[in-house]
Image (cartoon, rainbow, N blue to C red; front, side, top):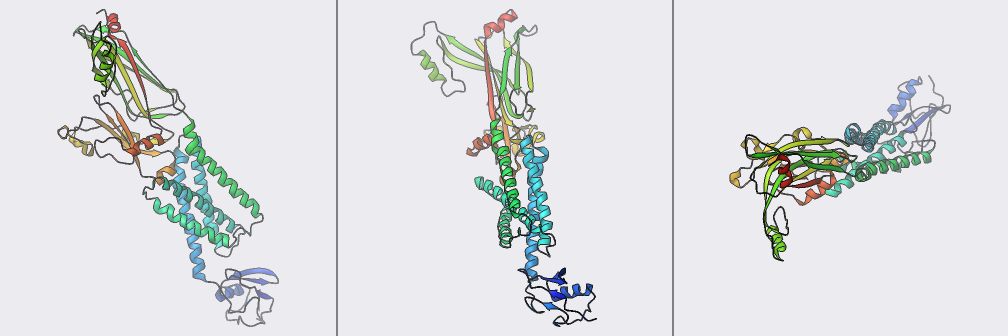
Length: 483
């Protein structure tokens, strides 16, 4: 059949794609002579027709030999753009899903949901990039791809900024740093090609992107900085000595003690260490002390665990009567929850003490700052037992007998977890030495003290102590028992 010159091949565009029209209507587009023949075949043209015949085709902006497309370069750019968007989608899902599904506060869950939705947008953008790198059948494909790249650049920049605070190696560094470099390249390519120009209202699109970025930034700042800081912690502690009773079988007086705790703040907490200690005080009395006795008493007690000085008494000494856990490491206490412990300790009838006191100390960590592996942390390890493995520290080597609690802790904002090494909570408990607690990036390696980084980590996870001391005279305790 003869081909009339109403088939027009337009001049190649910036990517080398040539549009084919019939009577002014677009019937396809071609990157190469082979694609042009396939279009003409659908119009009923023979396969071996002469493309250079002016009676068959009318060429604009070049003849039948003008095909400036670099297929390998175009396809490589399209594949790289899609791969980066898919990787960014996966990264956003990894960031957002733990917070969206398990964060304690509403703001943190919203932050997680925003990251998940951003990942969905990047998945759509990856599909749009396939069309934008191809024949661009959808006018908005370039703008959608640009939106996905902007989200990736914002996310990777945030991760990079947070990583620079500590500069600790994590496996995710090998993901978000290359993705940050990729997003700069992708942004350059899409801006250079003015990928947004095909949408009807590009200014509204730009305003929507800016508004979305602003709301996301405000949400992240609120959930990571303001909201956890603005909610204060409050505890109510109380200790009451009950009415003592004489033991009929042994020459001791039994004294009941009631310890009480209530979380009166608005934030649930993990108890990472606690201890109660009952002490009795004894001293020698002097009815005519010298003027310097008070200072001398303080000098004698200076540097000891309890520094006290009183007029008329000398050589103050303390005897530990009872000590133990109050609530238990790894236990959780919700906002408004209260707990009471009733305990009985013994005093000898011929005791020479003058007062009895109880000290209660609780170390806690806020649940809105981190998530503790409670199941692992609740398991005690005894330093004097060889089967404890890495927790074993024999007394023969100068180690103390301690009970050790240790577990991984994760920040409630998953951005922090991805940009820092793992953190661990370690609680060491002893009825003699008392409790110590630490949060650090160092896994347990034996009996150790605080390192400089631990104070910062304790503040980051909202870890703090609350304590109480209550004292009563021995005469008052024994009077109720009739001794």
